[in-house]
Length: 118
Length: 113
Image (cartoon, rainbow over all chains, first blue to last red):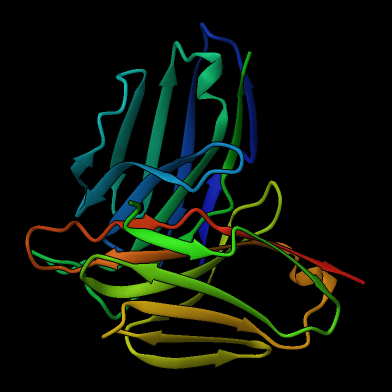
């Protein structure tokens, strides 16, 4: 299995809703990433997990709450979002050696969740 | 100045043409990625380079570490190659980097039949 699977592919939610995005990989990658991508812009890093521990939080508002329950799964919990949070949310994974990144392995991206906040 | 610069921003070509997209970066890197994104779609990794040249089908990617420059070439371009091509670098592992990617702004390629 060489894929990163993201569900759902599309999500429409109201500003008072609570929802979760899911990302799963079975490649043994120990680093997992959440990116946010607005239209016609490059992805922006939100969170990095290495060995199931949060190692980077790029000053993301608390209405986005990441969770890494095991080495294969990464969730992004959403609560009280704003319309400007509408975007494509991408998950990625990569190999990771403790202390620094493994340079011999590439990134694998999921196909993303298209989120619309109404 | 962005750490990763791509050129051109937009490119229109006729089917069959040879295409080159350029990427320059200003940081120390451990690897450079070329990524493809179709409209509304997720990102597909085309190449990861740390030196030299790689070829896959009609796609060729090269990197010159000394000049901090990489190129993506598409031979015999086809309308299905129309997409945004993104150069992204993985910063050097030394100095506390977490290995996340730094993205260029992308090159939008349209190949006309």
